[in-house]
Length: 131
Image (cartoon, rainbow, N blue to C red; front, side, top):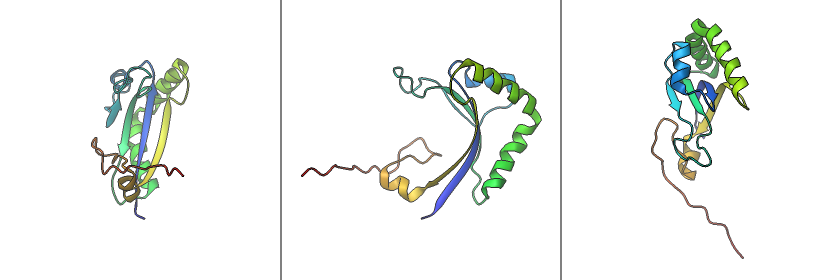
């Protein structure tokens, strides 16, 4: 089964918006989410998030991580300070380096979204068998 992968570094907060984080860091994010932009109660997504992403195909995970770190390195002091501030604001992880591996075949079969697209792929209904 073919696998795809991407790597991202994210800063998250329940209070500080992605735009405010970008102003502090001086680095524009590749992707952002806005708290409660999909659903107000309960809040979905649960936090504001800004991501620096590497989706370059054909690279090994360590090469994708290196690309992310190269982009972050000039602002490492500001990132560390902001991460500490965000951690004091709320619960959970405020800074994350994440490796995502996924199968496009499995996603299509189960109706998950392609992470590069806002549109759902094929949807499949699963019915529970009742005796």
